[in-house]
Length: 254
Ligand code: PEP
Image (cartoon, rainbow, N blue to C red):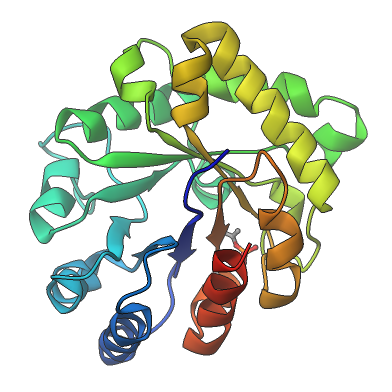
């Protein structure tokens, strides 16, 4: 699609603050002068401010792994979109499958979070994907379409333009099972078709559709060379600098 691949690492609940800072410093040095690729990391909330400081002046963006749907209030233990924005983040993961399946997040809550993130100029990385059961029952397209419809309900065209959507089949996350490049591309094409039907071709083509699910250095080239895969959301393989750099390297030479 002629876009620079957008590779994002989701650290989940991993690394210590000092490990995170060391990682960010080395990533910044390693990517200095490399412009063929867009790159981001999503550290723990408590590292965000420090990591953003380390990455100042680089092109590497920082995302939070979640935010609450309300702007502020009596929500003990929650973090607002404005708080992560103030910490220096530009992006936020919303609707990650671990949030959906371990913490019971539903589409309407995810939709509210996307709206709140957009209201403070944070760019959502909107995650969707089917479970193994749903795939085996032949319901992948139905599930993905419902997540898209409900998640994007009431969101203006100008906010859909340039949005990042991560297609992450639940059965491929953290399991070592990757969707084949063709399987992933097929769902990405379906997502692009949904966007074209609902927002027009120009907006649909401006959306970054990332693939996520057991991405590793060895499968990066095949995945990223698929015409509808604009980037990758990487979990396990993003917490070791060496493998994350190999993924970035493999994606940038495509
Ligand atoms: C993720 O957390 O978004 C992810 C895709 O994890 P993994 O790469 O470990 O499957």
